Image (tube, rainbow, N blue to C red; front, side):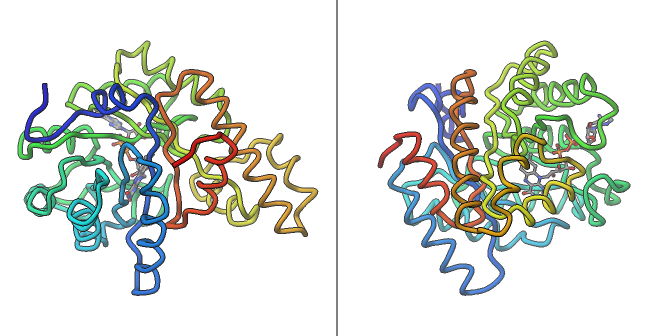
Length: 296
Ligand code: FAD
């Protein structure tokens, strides 16, 4: 059964077997826009299940997220998923954005709380007249818009979650509110993803959970990104990369090898697909696909 919202992620996954998807962010200027569309053009032939476009931290990319997802819907054969966060918005504003997305032809949304403007792990204060948690945004979307909904999941638990069981209950609350799939934060160890899926199943969150992949191409910037989210790179990963600290080309090659092994382990463990954080470039994803023998 399908509705005006289009196929559910479960239906899409069932149709195409394993799902491959790509995440982009709204660029700030014309050069960034060219780079994004070049990446979309290079990745479209792989026939991804969906491509998603983030909603800028602090809630600042409303117009660009709507414009890019709308253009993807109009000008490509790809299925766009627009991210939306609660940060800085009242429920009336969120409803207006959902209307804009709908008018632009976007039928899938990632419903997120968003990080506090001061960064992950700092105090979260909801906007007056807005929403506190992502499960409330899922419920709002179910009530006000005809859309399919995805949510965030965290392989090591969300930074603010009291413990891993509470974290799984939060995922279940998002499932109960009407979310149909989840995408994880970047997975650093396959075993963390497997444990998350087990916790989610035990809590009754019975939907596909797609692991997020971000290859390490530069050790310094990955370390900063991981530390910003209050996580740590696994010792085994840094041990493999540190010998190439002064050789960017070999470090990049080892980063691609590590990501390939991670993808193989995740698929081997039964992951329904892989979601690539592309940073608006296609090269690393295409290299991993070549290693996995995924062709256009
Ligand atoms: P929630 O599910 O609301 O959880 C937030 C915190 O509140 C957690 O610690 C949770 O345990 C706790 N919590 C939830 N519900 C309750 C409750 N009822 N009672 C008590 N505590 C509760 N950020 C952006 O700004 N833009 C993006 O486009 C974006 N895309 C993302 C995509 C993915 C796949 C992922 C994994 C994250 C993304 N983020 C994005 C980051 C995300 O917004 C942050 O990690 C945010 O801190 C958590 O969002 P959430 O939707 O999981 O929030």
